[in-house]
Amino acid sequence: MQLSIKASLAIHCLILISEFGKTDKITSEKIALSTGANPVAIRSIISALKKDEILNVKSGTGGATLKLPPEKITVFRICNAVKPHFCQDIFHIHTKASKLCPVGRNIQETLQMSYCKFESALADSMKTVTLADIIQDYHLQLKKEK
Image (tube, rainbow, N blue to C red; front, side):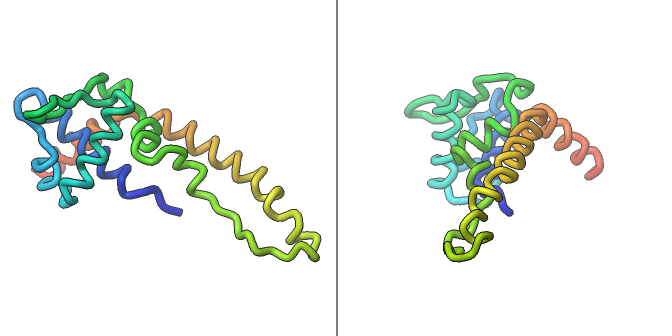
């Protein structure tokens, strides 16, 4: 089970923008330097966050700022912005089961019942953690670093 790396990149971008966006022009190139990712990939993530109205991005000169306070941005929203319906993509069911076998005939519907519960629980859990929570963890990490 793996959540797309786009999610961690998006959160990295948002922390950087939250921490430095008011005093510095945060561009995809600056974010790429911080994340180690390609600026094109960063622009794609920034575009998705802008489309979901999490970010403001200045046209032309560049520079991004948070459109919402960090307390209003959940991890679920961030992940869903960069990878819509990501919860459904986490759990997969094999598709070549034998229709001659009673288990094989029914495994997809059987597992789907439980998988829907898992997806719902995961989404509900991710909605309880905000960007503000993660920024707080970042600040704790900075203190440990000193």
